[in-house]
Image 1 (cartoon, rainbow, N blue to C red):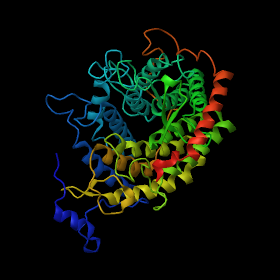
Image 2 (image 1 turned 90 degrees about the horizontal axis):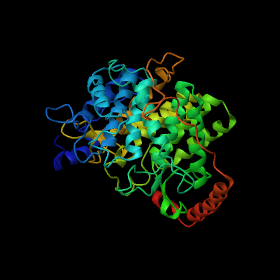
Image 3 (image 1 turned 60 degrees about the vertical axis):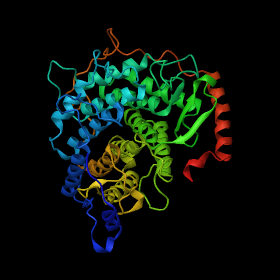
Image 4 (image 1 turned 90 degrees about the vertical axis):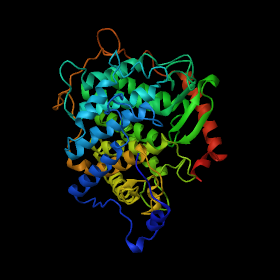
Length: 454
């Protein structure tokens, strides 16, 4: 573990005029500068990883980090390779992504399944899907392949679609003995939507797109997506999803944004164009009004209550906003203005620790290091900074445009053939119920549901 600033060095960090702050230097107009900053931050992030040490488990982060965040971290290293061409972390990334696949090659390893949620599994699947789209080096031929791994995650989740409550959707937790089993949340359902859209684009199999349509419509029907394109945290199925937790997290907006943009890319429809732009515009809530275009976690940063998980959420909004520009180029100007300003602010916060380049959490605080540190802080800074190279790299590949990853449409199902088509569309009764929920949402907002923004 690293050492962190003493009281005297913390005072020094405030004395900007004395030039005693050692922050990462970043010029967002220079590819070399961006790559150098990304290299420094990635190195700092990997100081927390112990899975490549003797006697440790590849792919796992030590406490207090949960398994899902390790999958997210290796996804950021796939991105790092994509943006910079630096192969430094490829071996350890490939080792981790293959070690954690589990006996059914669907990211349900025995050491995690008792506590694993649908969102946890999905973050590993999304890392594999990115590896397929970006032509990250393929595994050895006797190992599961990136596309097949993503398909296995998708297929294993598709059979969990739960019509017993709320007209469908995925539960947060996979097993009934886990707390949160009765919660249907945006990130679990949003990851499924995101995977469905991207798998549909990569493979050309429209069944995935049917699932994406179904998931979007369900989220809208129960109110996880509001009429003004806020994505709320979740809802309790023991009361048939008639009340909502209105907290907004940046990664929920991001995961739906890239999914919607991908659906526009595949369909070219006006509907998906409108959904993409409305989702993008609604991300403004995650950019501080006092520091233009600088990203912050609105529900926890202002009050200093971000937990370990939440400190990484900005990484995924940055990741998915950047990726959106490749499949929906009309978003580029909006996105890049925010990524550039946020990257500059993040680099200024990377001024802590004994090394002088440890990254803090609150980019809105300027160059005065906020004292926060960890995997989430490093990953968020890494993703927002390296995302400024998005216009210098190719877009996601498909199996018809140069993608080389081999798939298995029945992976994770134990059978043959394609993933089953959605059994039914949302019924009129479900839509009527959604209207009732919309009324509840509006009442909640008018009654002060925006408390978390204050």
